[in-house]
Image (cartoon, rainbow over all chains, first blue to last red):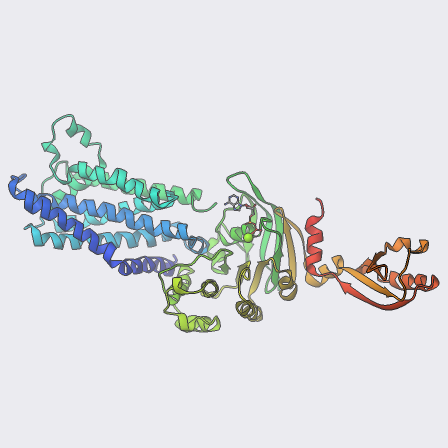
Amino acid sequence: MNWHGITAIYRFEMARTWRTLMQSIASPVLSTSLYFIVFGTAIGSRMGSIDGISYGAFIIPGLLMLSLLSESISNASFGIFFPKFSGTIYEVLSAPVSPFEIVAGYVGAAATKSVLLGLLILATARIFVDYSIVHPLWTLLFLLLTAVTFSLFGFIIGIWAEDFQQLQLIPLMVVTPLTFLGGAFYSISMLPEPWQTLTLFNPVVYLISGLRWAFYGFADVNLALSLGMTAFFLIACLATVSWIFKRGYRIRS
Amino acid sequence: MGTIIEIQQLSKTYANDFRALKGISLSIRRGEILALLGPNGAGKTTLISIVCGIVNPSGGQIRVDGFDINRDYRAARSKIGLVPQELATDSFESVWATVAFSRGLFGKPPDPAYLQRLLQQLSLWDKRDARIMALSGGMKRRVMIAKALSHEPEILFLDEPTAGVDVELRQDMWAMVRELRERGVTIILTTHYIEEAEEMADRIGVINHGELILVDDKAALMTKLGRKELRLHLQQPLASIPEPLHPYRLQQEEDNQVLVYHFDAQQQSAIAELLKQMARHDIEIRDLHTRESSLEEIFVNLVRKPR
Ligand SMILES: Nc1ncnc2c1ncn2[C@@H]1O[C@H](COP(=O)(O)OP(=O)(O)O)[C@@H](O)[C@H]1O
Ligand SMILES: [Mg+2]
């Protein structure tokens, strides 16, 4: 195991985070705060509570998931796309690091950043909404699993993308809509059929539902199903990444 | 001594079906400076990139110090440092950070004292905290050299290291190459500047159209292929060359005042005979000198040769 190699990549990526502190931390925190002000405080005060939870508190897991997904994807995809774009990837390819070590460095850093950001958003939410977490350890587990899974997903996108437009295509066209429609702002039981059944094909539903269970002890779908789906995405991403490295897909000509 | 890199039947076909390398076999000796010469598109960068792990080979085998580059890639790659042809550096990182990154990436524990010496040697020490994007092109190239040497490699690849580089950096670079060789580092460089190969290399390989045309000691190459030229300045212009001198295929130049004789290294004894013949025909010589063809001329002859 090339520990120095993993550490080098990890620290390089984290240094990028601190250097771009404004856009990497401040802007997601700011935009989430805006959501809380608009949906939690302004509109939420006119909404009834859902399952005994005030609307402002109800949307926290969904909003957290929204930031977590988009930040994990954009951090990890940019982290590997940029060296490809600038040509500095040659060094990583020529180094005695295994695919696993490369992924550990890049994805580890992106996931770390997302989890830190998630915790920061939770702290920020506290300013606007009063809430308490029923299962803090499960919350942390879901945050970690989601951050790692979607950083892996972002890594795949970063390798697949050939230009900046493609880099932003999937987060913008796929992930954000799925998150909004995945029950971030409502309980899916509030949807009429056939939308309720259709929604069950949206993978993000399980992530949000799992996190909401960790927060408040109830959820749209069964906990085991949420955990199973999250694990399934994780394994699917891992399988794709190892396929990529085995084939050299878009990395080595 | 012995072999440090063994390349066998290496071939590469890119995704667009272009055959960039057509079965190259080459042994690189431990501690030597090997210059790879070849026109643009010959396959030099492809060859280097495969050895370094950046491009996948289509066929063949490569061993670095006995380690297969696929099976034992860790051992193989950790011995190699590469300065690629294209200038590709980080932008926002400091010089120090990027060089320390390279060392870690190659699996070496931090060694600030070594990195300090390296940066000093490359005149980068004053710039260690500067952002790379604020550096000039020449300085960036120095940074790439520092990165390649950051993990104390036994083998250094320099892909066209002096293309578009100023005189000062070129001289520094050659001084450094010589010093590395003193320390036993094997150096493989590609260059368009044939004088450089001539000046620096122990052996020279010529690649064209994805094939290794030849590889030989520089001196042997010179004698084997070196064409010499004898220029004879005459007292009086010579209207026509007498019949018995025709086999020498002399050329007349400078208003028939100069006769030029081309000969190979093996034909040196013919000169005495030529001079005797000339004396017999009362052709008086005012002055004469010989000239060896440069490596450049050898090289041009080689790649022009229809294959
Ligand atoms: N990624 C690639 N895809 C297709 N063709 C390539 C690729 N890289 C290089 N080539 C082609 O392979 C040939 C050899 O290129 P290269 O190894 O860079 O030559 P050199 O370094 O000797 O100038 C060139 O004709 C080049 O166009
Ligand atoms: Mg080249």
